[in-house]
Length: 360
Image 1 (spheres, rainbow, N blue to C red):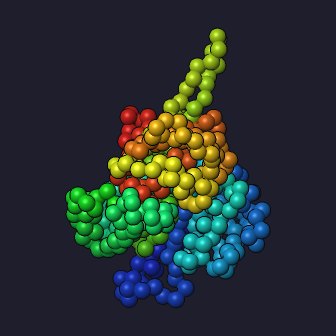
Image 2: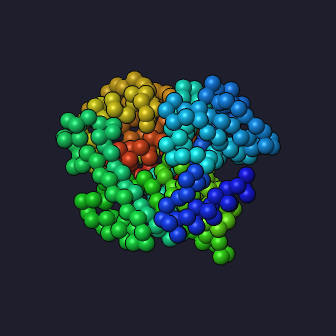
Image 3: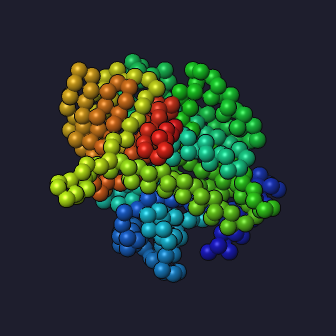
């Protein structure tokens, strides 16, 4: 597998260097990291799977048929039981459609990585910028009337490439009226170590497109490093913010605390806002019952549609508290926060206990 990927990596770079386009059939290597709560067999038993081949205990090759883009093959690496890695040499439209179906089908037990703005910026520190994409899209979640009354933009799309991409992003961040709308959704970097290099395009959903390089192992290590950074954030949330109790000799001791999201702009109608967030639809995938608890605050008793975990949300105009109960998945918090950044407030902050961390 690594040999085939390495050949494609080097051929892609040669094609792009000489001709600025790929040879027919020479698709770029694509990778997706997925958070899992199920065994691999549950994926292989789906009706969309045509064939499965076991390469070894933690590596399988399977063929997936999409609803719109035909069929193609995936390698699935499950050496990390919590975070699976999907590899494919397929076309972009197939890869996108297939990963969407694999992750969001009913009862899938799988979820994407949800990388906040600050984590995407951290990936940029791993190499030299070659591109940035900002895609703020309030109109994908909120209706026109809500946007008109609450926001200055319905959408903002900037797609920059080249060696000046970092300068472009820094200039935009220094623009006072634009910075609160910079929903950083993708970054391209060139990473070099010990004479080898790899060119990566990484999205805030944990999707990688490898645009060339000299050594596939540098791509593998890049994916692993980003995955580990994400796992550390997830582990901190699950270690400190799952609401429950520990048994003691005389009764029980409560543990855990809510995760807090601080907004940079007030929400004028909290009840209406929650109706667009907690409606069982993508991308938030949350559902529940909303009730008023004070003059300006509301509470949601709900579930995460990803895996049926019980959650609760309390919200006032400038903050939101998320309660995760025993057995819940920390990915719920990162999905909620990252999508709030993407569709409402890119300058929002996530506050959780990990040396008093704030993340943007």
